[in-house]
Length: 145
Image (cartoon, rainbow, N blue to C red; front, top):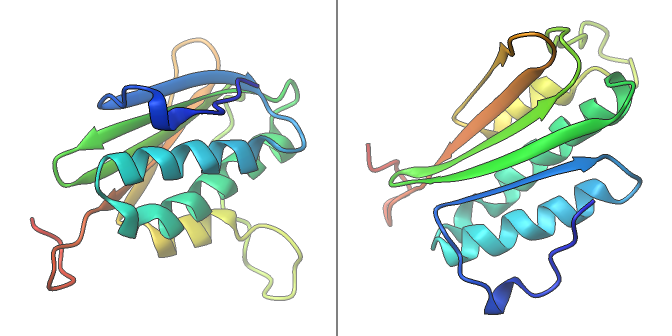
C-alpha cells in the first residue's frame, strides 16, 4: 500500500492512481487520499458519498479477490469526480441483497444509493474495473448539468 502522508504540499493534478494489495487499513488510507483530492478540486460536498462508495468497492476486493490486488484511479471531471477500482477477479460484481436480514451483500446497493452513476466492465484477459461517478452540486443543490 502506498501511503500519502503530506498531500498538502504536493501538486494536485486532474488524476490520481495507485496500485496496491488490500490490507487491513487500506480503505481508511484511500479515503484520506480521496478527501484530500476532493478538497483540492473544490468539491468537498462529494467527500461523504465518494468515501462511502470507495469503502464498499475496497471491501469487495477484500471479500472476493483472492490475491487482494487492486488499483485505484480518481479522475477530476468538470462536473464531478469519477473513481475506478480495478481488480484481478473476472467475476461480475453482483448485489446479493435479497435477504433484508443478511449480514452482507449490500455494498453495491449502497454504491447505487450514494452515487450518481456506477458500473463495471471486464478487462481483456483477467480482471474488471468497477467505477462510480459523483456529480458536483451547485449552490442551489442541483447538478450543474
